[in-house]
Image (tube, rainbow, N blue to C red; front, side, top):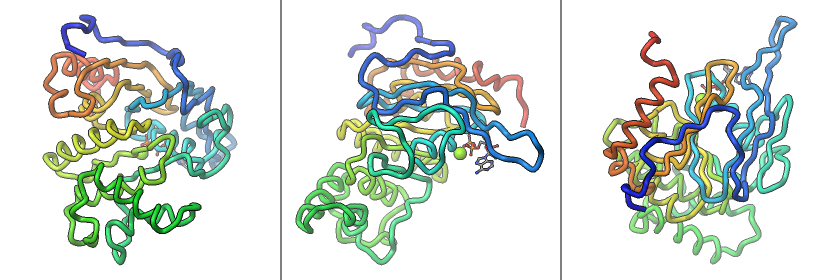
Amino acid sequence: MSQSALPAELTIVPAPVPRTAAAEVLSFEGVTRRFATRTATPFTAVQDLSFGVAKGEFVSIVGPSGCGKSTVLNMTAGLDRPSAGRVTLSGEAVTGPNKHVGFMLQKDLLLPWRSIVRNVEFGLEARALSRAQRRERALRELARCRLSDFANHYPFQLSGGMRQRAALARTLAIEPDVVLLDEPFSALDAQTKLLLQRSFARTIHDSGVTALLITHDLAEAVAMSDRILVMSERPGRIVEEIVLDLPHRDDPIARQALPRAREAMSHLFQSLHLAEREE
Ligand SMILES: Nc1ncnc2c1ncn2[C@@H]1O[C@H](COP(=O)(O)OP(=O)(O)O)[C@@H](O)[C@H]1O
Ligand SMILES: [Mg+2]
């Protein structure tokens, strides 16, 4: 899409955000998560979250530290359960860890004694696949992550960024319905981060997988997503949605330079009241 075809204004949708018309891979319906405390009053981490993510969409959730971003991902992955409301993945209620979700963390968690290709195969070993099928799939994902030449290397032989790409290949190899990314770049230096964001954006775009990214990095959210959900401070609620509708979803570096991307950034600064806050 050419930029001139875009409407002049950013699309900012105040809460409650409407559900996507397209088929939803992931949906949260009135999800609240409370944690027990030593007092009689439970602690509410997130409250009444309702949103959907359509197939192939890349959605980011931003919000201040402690607003419940990781809690949202954990409930999507089935590692945590809502106190109220419902989380569904491809139409099925999430009741525990399941093979429809690929979860990526800051740490790559590669096994140091296995070669890169054998690391990518690791998640497939519990599946009903032959060795040849596992190898074929692992090599396909390594190619998508531009790591074909490193298939037989060991993790210690790769840079931090390459190891994260290998971890993404391993995540995609299980063919998840949705990939969850919990601040996957936050431990990296600024330049590696930019390059890795671009690498991930390309791979995710090429694979067509649905992605949900949690980040406190506003520029990253703008550079990588189709849509951003903004959460408030505790208890975390969705306060608005920003529909980016920008070109270059596969190239965050090009995207950051677009006037609309800058506009989205300044809007986010306002939404999160960054000007008035002090840490
Ligand atoms: N298992 C838990 N038990 C008690 N409190 C928790 C638990 N997990 C998260 N919390 C609390 O819920 C809030 C949201 O946490 P989290 O989802 O990690 O926030 P974020 O990822 O946005 O920084 C925090 O105040 C955190 O301390
Ligand atoms: Mg977190």
